Length: 255
Image (cartoon, rainbow, N blue to C red; front, side, top):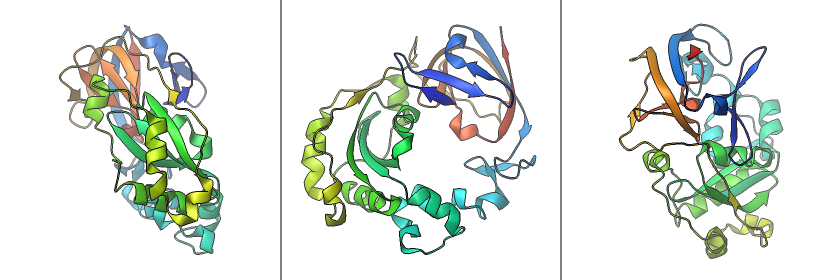
């Protein structure tokens, strides 16, 4: 889902020739039907392996290379190709931000500067702050690796969806972690910023989570009660991760 910052955040499903504001579906009955696959790269009806790609594409295209999930493996700044140097230079040699986000607990993460606050929204963070802004993905990656020794790097998605969260002083966290930033990235530390607070469109938070698996349950009907991160939350405590189902072709019916 694409998102737009606001109070609350606005969510959109974008189709080939139209789009849908998902917020307008709150308190409405929604039926999801799984009808097939479409790899995000080759567009073929092939079973999705990971990240919306079929098996062959996942192991061939630069959009699914290891440096995507592990920024510290980036080598474009050295002129070294992994799968496609032109693509890698286009993505890796852009300003990146290392940030703290509080979704279920305080965690450190990396994203391109242009993906803020989208990345925070996708993680379901109710507050976040930038720590450093560096000129390439490699520097962001080694900074994240260094900070992971002192702060988490994972979100507990169950805690996030249940809204069992506590506010944290992210400015204090930023200042406390400064000493652990690698020497190469110290000059990029952001000294004077404030945390961003995010409000999600949720009418009712789930208590006992049940995840919707389209391969096991190809048809599901429920009343939409909220949207947080990339999850749809339904009245029977079923949750559906839209991002995790990229490449799945579905029909939606609203009643």
